[in-house]
Length: 547
Ligand code: G4P
Image 1 (cartoon, rainbow, N blue to C red):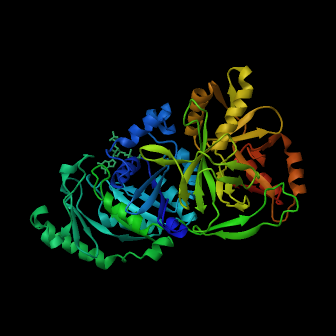
Image 2 (cartoon, rainbow, N blue to C red; image 1 turned 60 degrees about the vertical axis):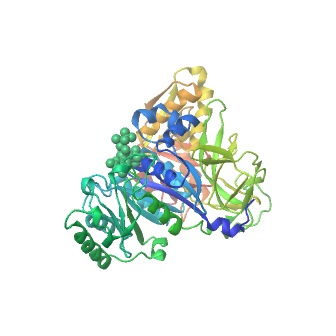
Image 3 (cartoon, rainbow, N blue to C red; image 1 turned 90 degrees about the vertical axis):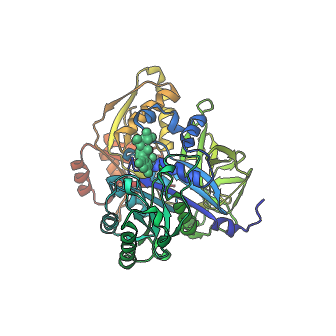
């Protein structure tokens, strides 16, 4: 039992995600953060653990073949009096939807850049999402053990392309074969780097830090003086770290290192512990389930992380983590309260009640039953399809968090199962995958086909793979006549009658999504524009907020 108060428990949580362009080193960094946090012993355990536990990303053949991590998961560890929840986000661009949703559950993001490459396309996209959601960002410039770009050029890139003030916390002393270490800006403390520690998980120690002017043994002639001069320039040329500006999203502290060689990782973990925000006050609505009679009108409310009622939302559903059990685990991010095992929670949008008897916490080496959890924590709630992405749960059942987006798919295909006797099976499987957010599912109002939508082609491959492995269904995807999907609703000057009128006129192109929301399937982007102009009372939207 914890002796801390509820607000104290909330205040010591750090829930963060790592964002990176593929190959920048996110997986390696995850591994080494867990190592620095004492959550695992040997580097390499992240993958080994994955295989042991048969997590999604590992038992999917496709992931192995392509070497990308497809599914997001969470890992919890306690270090230095704080509880860290690391949300793993897939880096491949086809999975951006999943990543976006995961970021809704994060309070802070670590942006990993490859020191030789700087900002890459996917970094930029993910950064935009963080900015949209006001998520503060800590920058980690990785792979210093290789030849890097000029550090000032890297910082200028951050300033000009992200409109973010970089505040260097450390300054690297060269890179690649000449990497000597790094200096703490403002204190002049020097952290030496030794190649001896290369890749060795068992002994990731670098020599202890010492004042730069006492560190001559780590330098060749002239280097030490050059470095002191560079640091002086840096101290004069860049703003000092200002936590408030960081929390408001104007400034990013910049740290450096090499994930592979476990250099700069302790410093990064300390920065997360010291600076990343604790769970924030969240905006929500108090709203009765839709079918409630005489329900009061929804009211805006603010949820304090340290308040008593357990509230939160589901940002991800992972199905079939254990292929023998057809289980579905809803990833529930807590926004407030003190959760206890066995507690009853209600789903706001359905009014359903659920006893959470077997909540799971995901530790790096294991999954364990969670006896209690607090704001910022992510617990896995096993269920049989009761919980969906975007659901809000609370003790009272009336708290609703909005804002989990669905994005209009960019590819729409028809899906058919080769064995016609399995059509019913297919429906169930497609619904399951759509509820998980793997792909989107549209049921045309006319006909019995299913249209499956995805942001990227790889999503179809993942889907086909999972339909085969998990549901025993051999499917083919065929081109559909549609190019775009838009959710429709009454516009500012419109009414439900206008939506009905439109749906009537375009019946052959109307469909319902998994939540039964009406969707218009356009044959081309030209058509989307055309109907948009012809029906000004209808709002055609590219995103839909679930929950
Ligand atoms: P990702 O999840 O962001 O896609 O990147 P990941 O960690 O898988 O790293 C991509 C590649 O970069 C890997 O090499 C990894 O070993 C390497 N890497 C990561 N951090 C560092 C670093 O600090 N320094 C150096 N030199 N390399 C680093 P790979 O050859 O593609 O894979 P592997 O065979 O080593 O696993």
